[in-house]
Image 1 (cartoon, rainbow over the protein chains, first blue to last red):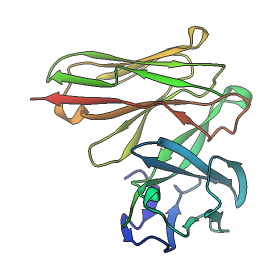
Image 2 (image 1 turned 45 degrees about the vertical axis):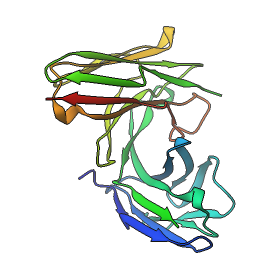
Image 3 (image 1 turned 180 degrees about the vertical axis):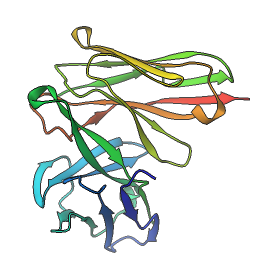
Image 4 (image 1 turned 30 degrees about the vertical axis):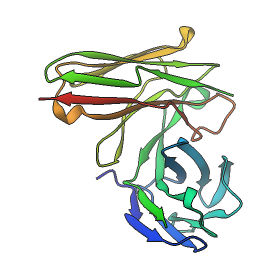
Length: 118
Length: 111
């Protein structure tokens, strides 16, 4: 168990629908990251939150949105779903290793939420 | 942008064999990490290795940042080592969480 909790593990839905994926970071971690893994695009960064605020954005579609709540859990909302949105969605949280500019956030991933759009 | 390239794309090993996976990256990085995705999809962080060498059991990794490559060594491979190995990195000017992943090396260890 990585300490990062994602729900649901599996989700099957239809095109045009909306779903919400939930993530709880490891205790003490303030950052939450969302990644999408699809067969054709590989692992893609979607968005990062730090202590409730958006910190960085990747190639996240306008149909997708996310937020981080005061208790630090995060939700990724996917709307107007298309077949191509079928993917494994990962959440990660991080611990900072090193010091200052020579340090980095080392990510720990949850088990993922597998979304199938039919 | 940064590019992360992994080789080989696929590797079939007999149990007990050793292997080396390579990751080449462009531009300056300060956050090279190796991950293993097991057959059930779980992504496990193996190493955070911006430079130097680290070892964890039968796995070790070396990053030569000045030459922009990293190597992951698997010794005495076991069937549980099967899965996809990813390296990931990001530019120093980017958000520290915005990792760019390579395409991965699919490893199959046969009994």
